[in-house]
Image (cartoon, rainbow, N blue to C red):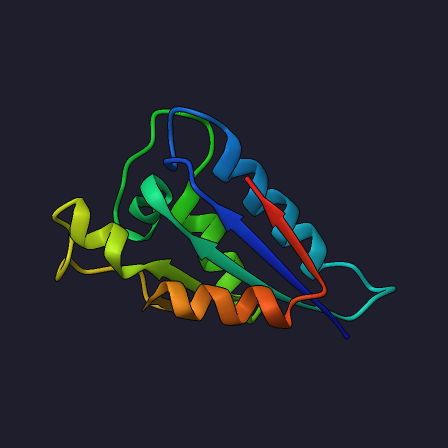
Length: 118
């Protein structure tokens, strides 16, 4: 089984980097020919994607995409230091996302066969 890690740094809306990362993640999970264990780590402004009930003006919904990934058993973690730096510590986050540290990310990088960044 391939271990694939996707790391995202950009905010959920304003650019399409997070959107494209999630599109890729969903597609990887849907591949039948290869068994993939996918992990998603959100850093910097990407951590705001885990805040629930955002109402996007664009034609896509990041929370819905994250919920699809969670239903596909994707491990999703977000940077606790990034949350703290933005004054978001203690806010409710979507169910299935977990606060993490740089040590958690380092462990994921070391155990991944492939790492993709957005």
